[in-house]
Amino acid sequence: MPKVKSQIEDEPESCFTSMIDIVFLLLIFFILQPFKQPEKKLRSELPKDLGPSTTVEDRVSIRLQVRRVQGQPKKAYFMVNSIRVDNGDRLFMALNDAAKDDKEVPVTLSPAAKVHFMHVLKALDQCYLAELTKVAFDAPPPRGN
Amino acid sequence: MAKDKKRQDPGALSEGAEFDMTPMIDVTFLLIIFFMLITELADNSKAKLKLPVAVKAEVDRHIPGRLIINVLRKGEIEIMAVRKTEQELDMMLRTEAATCERDEDGFPSKAIFIRADRHVEFQYVQNVMAISMTHKLWKLAFATKDDKY
Image (cartoon, rainbow over all chains, first blue to last red; front, side, top):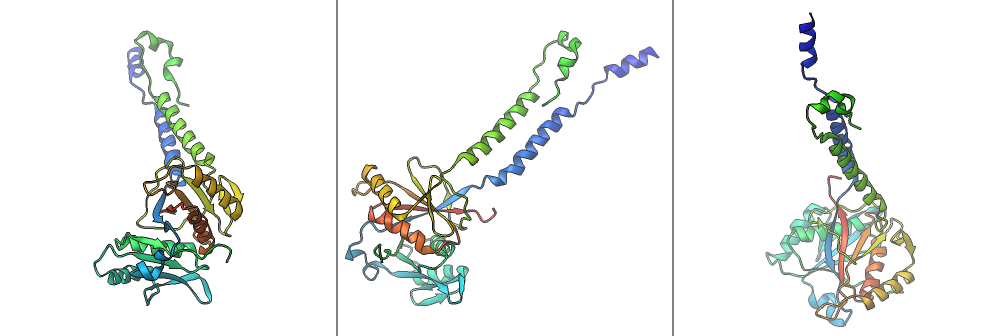
């Protein structure tokens, strides 16, 4: 009998405490991970001067307007030159059509004052998706007006 | 946190000292979580906003010296957790433009990072852009977020 007892004592024990510790820590880590929202950015440029040479008529080949839908303040539509586009995905196609494979064509983004910012950024995003990189915002109205 | 079995069993020490890595890993993970949370909570330059989504956005790496301007849902301007009027922003950008480095064309090279709420009316963002342009601060970026979050 004593021989059997010593054999049992010598058997290695598996201690789960440390494993549970690390599993819990990893669990906390991955639960908290979504709270750390990685921010991204869309680059843009403002006109370097406000002189008459920077007017839309002189320089722009594509004029992209963002307007608010009447009676629906949260919604917006886009105008690519004179073509109305209601959907952001169609905007990509409309921009491609307007650019006619010329990716160097300058685009002037001209959003309405009351339109929600997300629609403006959507328009900018679609320009970059269409690989139109020369996007500039229309010169804002003089301050004080 | 981890149970140190060796300390409870003095006989084990005589058989040869072993280095238990488990508590060190525990503490390391805890420190990582602690500093992750602290850096996130202590960053007062970024107001809590619902950012717009963009597909072609690039990862925002920290640019030292750039000015972060938050535009809240109702159009308020906030910089470093302090509300600013348009006049105050104007004065601030004037000082920034006067003191920062210049690019090869002689324009201020200071970068402006606009964090605007997705539902704010564009006119408020446009005001910030107009003030930036008045002081020839042309380098601009808009904060966005990933679709999955």
